[in-house]
Amino acid sequence: MGAERRGGRARVLRLTALLGCAGVVLTGCASMPDSGDVHPVKASQRGDSQVRVYAVQPRKGATPDEIVTGFLEAMTSDDSNFATARSYLTAEASKRWQPEASTTVLTAAPDPGAPILGGRDKPGRSYPLFGRQIATVDAQRAYQPVTPTDYRRTIHLSEQNGPDGKEWRIDSLPPGLLLGASDFERNYVSVNKYYFASGRSVVVADPVYIRQRQDPVTRQDPVTQAVSALLEGPTNWLKPVVESRFPTGTALKKGTRSLEFDDRNGLKVPLNEKASSVGRPQCTKMAAQILFTLKDFSSARVDQVELLRANGSQLCVLSSGQAEEYAPDHGSGRLDSQYFVDEQDRLALLASGSKDAAEPHNVPGPFGDGRLRMSRVAVARDEQTAAAVSKDSSKLYVASILTGSELRNAVVGSSGGQAENRLSAPSWDGRGDLWVADRNPSDAALMRVPSGTGTPQDVRIVPGIDGARIEAVKVSADGVRIALLLTKDGTTTLKIGRVERHGPEDDPAVTVTELRPAAPHLETVTAVSWAGPSRLVVVGKESGGVQQVRYIQTDGSTAPNSILPGLNQVRSVAASDDESRPLVAYSQEDGIVRLPAGANWQTLVKSGTSPVYPG
Image (cartoon, rainbow, N blue to C red; front, top):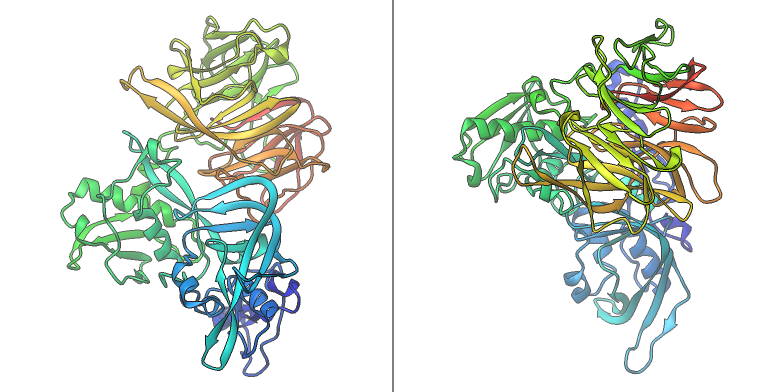
């Protein structure tokens, strides 16, 4: 990024070869380089996270242009406490600047404009900074996307007395860090912290961004950063519906910058005095939160966690296998079965194996024997029952898919004039409740059917959806987050809401609150499915673009290489909570297709619609 700005002076050292040879015995790497220069490259070039950026101090007699450019480049490095970046600031500005407080993310490097000379009342020079802002990261490390908008802020410089005479330094600047998207991706990585759903022993993912390498301010490595972020508590958006089992004020023992692994992939976590007196049941859940938080780290396999008191004695030990009882899908079915509506409008089961698996077959009961012609379906997470919307989308039925049974009365009905103004596809949450939207313009509603058979309850959306119509509903496995496709003025957008429950456990009042955009970069979204604890797969297109199938995080961020192989005329998509399972989609051109890891889309069934995993 920085070298795109008028002769930038950042320097980077490519560590790829060095790190690749670290495993010399395994890889056969013959030797390590012992000579060569450090070469200037663009700080924003796309590459792996092993590229390091080393900024340089301002030279003696540096011009104002060089000070501005050097400072913007220095922000992309990760030297201790941003010492190099601070060397471009006045002493007072350095004290005020808090780079850890927030990060502004632009589509590309901030572009300094021509300097504006100051007057008598404010001498010096001002440089406008231009860009397109796409997100911010707050002090809690939470990523917040914004609709791409023009960014303009100002950096002001003044002449100061230095050891070698007068020198230009920055005395006023925007708050926090200012990074282009590629530098942000190089320096930061998304991790899920885990907390317990309020009143339940089920964990919920809370995505945040931490530094890929050592944090410049705390000097903690990534594993330690993740644990520290967990101990700080949930982000503000998720906080109303989750709980941490760590006592208030719990933190790592003072001075901890790196956590110790033993030879059995066990991690020792020393805590401060706040946690020293907790009992074993609570400690076990504390350890589970850490295990879930660290399980996605490819560089650190953690098989067990040992929590330590401030005096070094053991609080408790928990293995990764024992922690699985707190997973949202614990006790559910296989979660890898793939279902769809066949050409005769019946529910069929796809074999869950490879491309060459057996032919699909219809499920037992009224959904598979033709007694109900259906348009859309959702299979409960225990794979014992399913919910199906009738062919004309006017009624929602629930029935067993394990044994033959009667077709009971519909649990929900809609009186909308046309099929597109009636019921949406249903969705099951991890509690066993069924969700569906009535799209009738004169009587629109989001409904929850307790246990799939109880009395339907209207779910309030606070503060509301401003006249938009709910096209699709997908509830997370943990039951505390909901994805909604909302249509207004011919455009369909994706938003994520928080599911709050108040009152008695057996009859709570349920609301969806604080909807936030999950894919503001997409002009319209056609389909969505949960694809893991904090990941969605969406079908949509950017303004003026073509349809894409891609992964996004629930916080609205996207990872590099998140766009999947092309597929035409996709109308629905399904993913498993198990991220290792292949995607399944319905294309009007290709029928029911599957995307195995490392391969392209493969047609499974030429005639059929509405593919789903349990959920």
